[in-house]
Amino acid sequence: MLTQQADWYDTPLYYDIIFDQDTAKEAAFLEALTVKHSDAVSGQALRILEPACGSGRLITELALHGHQVSGFDLNEHMLEYTRERLKPKHLKAALWQGRMEDFALPSSQSFDLAHCLVSTFKYVLEEGGALSHLQRVASSLRPGGLYVIGVHLTDYANEREQHERWVGERDGVQIICNTHTWPPDRQARREALRTRLRITRDEKTTVQETRWQFRTYNAAEMKRLLKKVPALTCVACYDFTYDIASPRELDDSYEDIVLVLRKEG
Image (cartoon, rainbow, N blue to C red; front, side, top):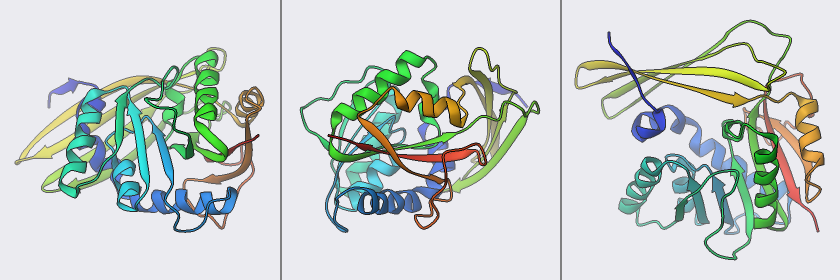
């Protein structure tokens, strides 16, 4: 079977089918975090910013909950997909094209909550870019506002290749997603990844492959980075089960970490 080289961000429907399965759970978790770790009141409408908003699954879900949502993404295909999914629900969101490292807000509005889950933060490959991103998000938050980041930590001692598999289906379209991660280069702070989407649609199957790199972080490297942004304080950690009743430590005992950073001052 022919494998097509493509950026999976250029095919938002397939990307969305894979990642949309936990959307409702993630949205509820984000709302619960604002009540537990900031001064937000349960049920209060929040001003929410999503860097790298992708296919708009959380933009849409949180707008349905009555929040004022904004987001940006580098890929215009993702932004257009988000606009189209909002229309039939008569929902509104402020959307624009921007990069994690140097995004600019279209207005002087401050936010109660910003969030960036599923390791998107690791696309920022340089230390300076990561620092700039955190500083810009901090500037966009009101005092007491939260930035919630989901990151897959790297185990430098594990020299085996890693594999993850997800399956999703919607309206007769089935996606099997296989992601392969090679052992990290600790000196360069890079790890290479390959994702293959096996797409079955209208009784035809095709394979789409994307290759990219992530910046690596273990717990100590993440702590060093956060220390450079005094405006943000890490007030809690969780894992990708999104269980508000089960906080974790910022350490290397688990891989999928959710950092809750609060704007001080």
